[in-house]
Image (cartoon, rainbow, N blue to C red; front, side):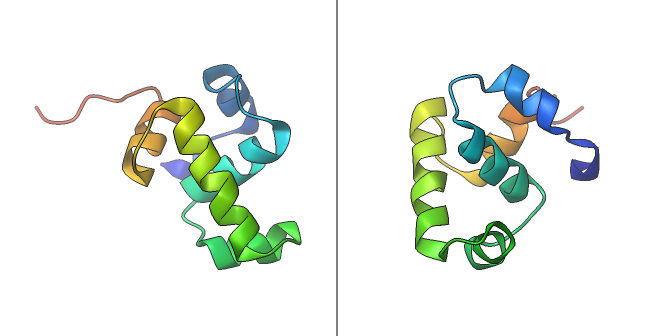
Length: 79
């Protein structure tokens, strides 16, 4: 499911994020930990944590599940 998320959908659904925050957002949605994402993007895990909290603040979200639902278009949950 998250493999089909493309950067274009993040740009469309989250225009208030910076390009780097969109990169981090994509990696979070793909299931990366802060440490893994930091390694992939060449920054510390603490920098990724800061980006993560900035993303949540800008989008008015509180958790990763809400972020995934926001980027994927708030798919219906349940029957």
